[in-house]
Amino acid sequence: MVGIGYIKYIHLIIAIAFALSILCISTLSFESAFAQKKDKEEKDKLIVKASMNLKNVDMKNTKFIRLIGFINGEEVKQDIPIYSIDKTKNKLYVDLKVNKKNDIVEASTPDEFFVCAYQVGDVKKSYNSLAKFDCNEGDILSTSKPTPARLFQLGSDVYEKTQAVYGAYINNTGRSDSHIDKVKIKIFAPLADKKDTKKLVIAAMIKGQIQSEVIEDVQAELDKSDSSTIQRTFTFDRDTDIGRIQIGDRYHACVASDDLSPPEGQECEKRVVKHFDKSNSLPAR
Image 1 (spheres, rainbow, N blue to C red):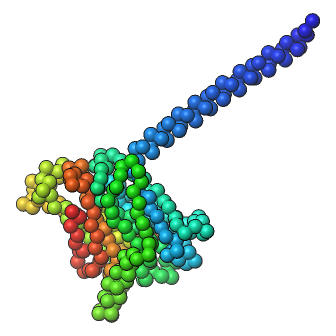
Image 2: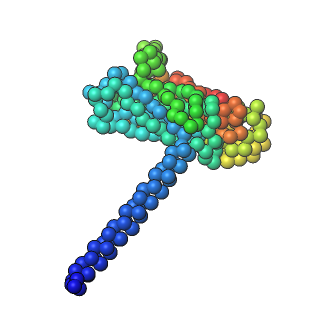
Image 3: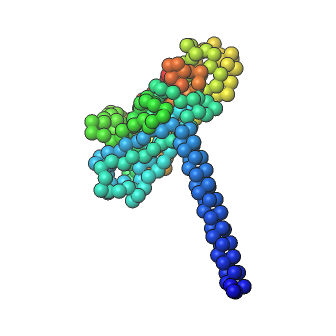
């Protein structure tokens, strides 16, 4: 005859096995649901893959790399510590993700974007010098696959052009305008061909800093003006967390709206700072 203790033992084993099977099924279901949610979120993202050539990065004196850009009406910003970078690699890849659709614009090809990267070292020590940087302004090539943005590549002359303008200014004037603490950037968005635009965003970036403004009712603003151009002036502190803005520093501007497409839902342009005593102007489309 089987003892009562043995039967209780068998029942306990069965109960434990049942509980473990339920737990396993629950875990698998949770993992599956999480994976599905992650896949959906990834499908809803527009990706620009920044590719940085580490051979042209000063790995010894740089503390972090600042990546900043404006993609599909959204700001992206990321600081990458040098210690976190694999020194055995020649390239560093970073995925910059934004929503494919937001309340301003829905991504499509060939919408424009820009991405810049700054090599930031000892800011106090090199405050009045020009931190090495590179920028890539391009078109979205696909909304389902990453669009490449190559930085610090051989042949890029972005930094050299800034150095040339800065050097010429110092040589010609003999001054650094150290007493000036603000920089103004005026952005124009001509809408003569898109007078029915309802809502748009204007953004400006300089020295790793972005400012933007959403114009909620473009028509109301146009009605108050004889012009078909929307404009905004952004005032930046010349002192930034990655150094001082100098004559020659490159700045970018973008304007985005679904109503601008076609040809493009976001358009971007670039120039270099030439004035501290008045606004630096740039038509963004």
